[in-house]
Length: 225
Image: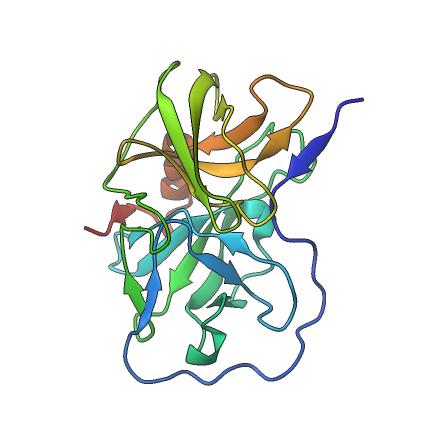
């Protein structure tokens, strides 16, 4: 039997407790693989893929669409929610709802510059995101997610809008980056145990093109340096 795992947080319908109060000054590191959640009092999270600015000068982050909860929903860094929201979800997203990896799956988060220290560096592994581009067959792609950390594998499929390799990922890793060296080539989507290779990523270039076409948050995305 074919089994598909989408590596994101489970659907959550209630926010428990009182939203944390923001502290003065940017103190929260946000970069590749940062764990975030709209529901700091409920178990479940996803990962940030990359941080940058758009052509309106807004600080934004890229993540996966199947973790998107709703435009203007506040999101918090896991473990640092008391410092206030790191940003807000926007209406710029595309969700691959059927779990078959047939569509673009991404979301743009508007980050809070009063709280966030933006970075191209992961704070838990040696993953760095310095550029964006394509990947080729037989490249070594390393993904980075908040659950499993850094895992690398040979890219065995680079057709269409997706990449596939043998690296491990799991729930909570969705949205994190896959890099070739320091080049961002895609975002973690999930695993399909009925395919080879098993792990799927959305290619970054079609994602950025779709964001640009929407002409809103994230358009003209440029990585922080």
